[in-house]
Length: 604
Image 1: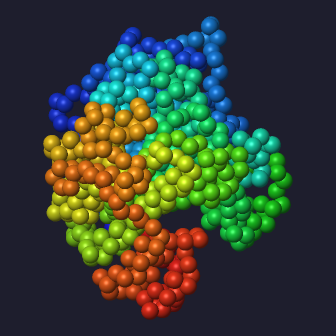
Image 2: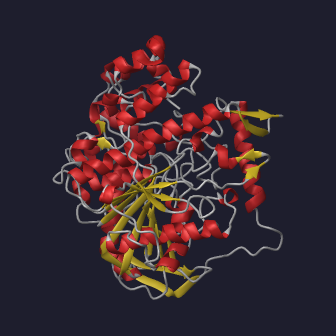
Image 3: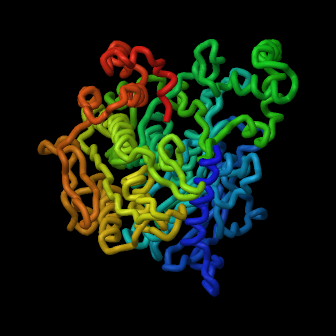
């Protein structure tokens, strides 16, 4: 724990060094501008002109606040104001963040607080070039494990200006408020009873865009949903949900994947096959914390004796602080709750392959799928299992070769789940517009003698500034980037591809027509576009494909692994559910893995 805390301190010190405003540096203060006055179905909003000339509106509500009796309910559209009530909303700052544990993704949060944010959090932000008219819309869903983060952390101003698109970023309900299903909360309305409130928020945001984005220069008939990590997961949820049909026309999935959680697992106690943080387990934890039961077992019996009305009232009485006090975010603020629920109405209760290989079971739109070459490293560079510190301050990898193997195998499994298997399923459904990429940029500088190009490499989330073509705004990760010409050229290329796709449903040669041709999945024998700077490989089409068989064969034959426990660990982490074959696992390492419980080593 001490090492983890020191890691956070180191990160904050480095960020402060690079990003604390210098003495005399002018801080930009948004000022309402008449040129940014717009009328929406729910009222008039006035935005401002950004530093580089983009028109910006922040903190626009897109649904009624999900507070009081609207907690754990589907979002409701905003009410149209009467002529007597209509006031101008000054849209100059992002709206409230949704309740979450404090983390590095919410730098404004008080780290001593149990929770940050407000349940009144359904707001969006819009970025448009001056005189925008009928431009493609790019609708961003932020990452953060569906339990932390906010749309206001991302600036779409530069992307809008450079590539002539309208960018929308949104907040959606997170964690226990975003995905929560308990029998006592049912109403008979399948939307309310789905438990998929965060998913429904994203759909409601799309409905708001359909009805209002033309006033901001966007084309409601050309909407691309794009997201990273959990936002990519939620982008695939838009493709899987019948309720999102017709509200968007293309999708970009950055470091995602998809798997619904069955309602019984989201609701039931662990003893009955449920999730460790199912609604039943959360209720038991609350009852113990409140002193109504002396043990978890007693709490289960107490809950069984409560009437439906009493249980509903009990859950609604809980303040966010009481709910979030039950969770440990492990430094990143992310909580492993059951999410993206297969309720059978908002989202199908089917396997991922069954959903995306059948054109009748998902919204079959042109799609880009991609991962970063070294996805897991972001979560490993602060982990004392892999990193040691000197004097409690200077980080170093304990075993570089073993560390890089762990990164590689984790990234291969991520690519299989988030790109290759999905691409094959979607092509089987008849989708001819499936495109894949792998982000390979790894030119970070060293910090305090710690070589980040090795420790992080092409880590999770590091492609985001390239996509937005903005290394200054947003998440405060600028210290990771050298700001050289090759880096900028890669950002220009990536933002060009992304927006060409938003325009045409094909990334092709980018908006300028000068990029390397991006071919569809398995067109001319190619699979993925490799995205790297000219300091290294550059950009090119590759023909590799990750399969279950290829991963298992590589792991079994890897003679660089000296400790068979490492081989067992890789297998347990890479293969889950139906892909975990007990006989294969038992035979690994000459039978050594048969002595190890895979559940004890299956989590990073």
